[in-house]
Length: 347
Image (cartoon, rainbow, N blue to C red; front, side, top):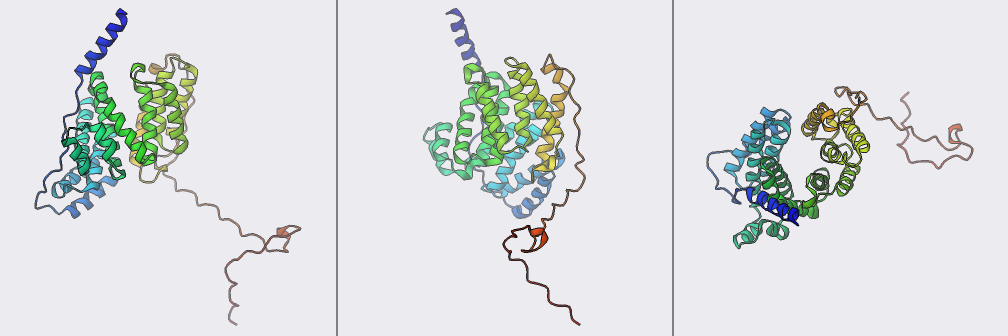
């Protein structure tokens, strides 16, 4: 009984120490003097090169100018929340910089959510963020809801365990709504999120490695070339599963990192910067392999592909042989409608 009382007290102390994010759900007022179309075009050019941190920051500055001139520009707001999330997740290396990027992502995400007048009206009536989102959000809101939830989860986890506990139910509610509205968004992002959620959460807060593995397997089956699915499986699931089945966990860890590093980052259209960031994570995890798995032995060498080589031309399918020819076989085949015969050459 004493242990239970202490556990409850400890849980309450952690919850009390954490806090909700303080951003507000407001659409700003339009500023004059900015050509939003020109700013959008320039920002998009930098966005395409977001694999470089400087280019990403230039894109974000451009999108901020767009929103200043047109506060209801949903595309620019979506890029801002996703872009600041990526800045923290894929480029920043210091915790303080990560926290600042994710905090900014959440603020832009809340401004994007405020475009939904029904959601804001419910908040004004005192309805909670989770309950209002459950009834008000539509498929148009999915990008901003997903990236805001992801940034909030990262920000809370890095801030403190108590902050994570304080915000986990809101994050879970938002991802649940994304799952309901568009479960294939961004390479089944919500499925991937559940894999991480059930792996990272402590058991008393709903953590379940069995559920986690099911979600990760589903995400990988749906999008095998998405490196993020595999990195999270290795980092979040395998490192904890080693306490139960160490050999299986290490095999999964090695298998997923090998896949990520032996395939090219340009395998998914338009996602090369994010895929390259996942490869950086894979190399970082490999560097900590013997720390994460105490009984880890030598690992087989990973063959890095030549991703600069041009893609091979697809094989040209040969036309079927005509009926009655030797190639058609004894019984022949039905004739096919091909192009008309060429006219005879002029004499």
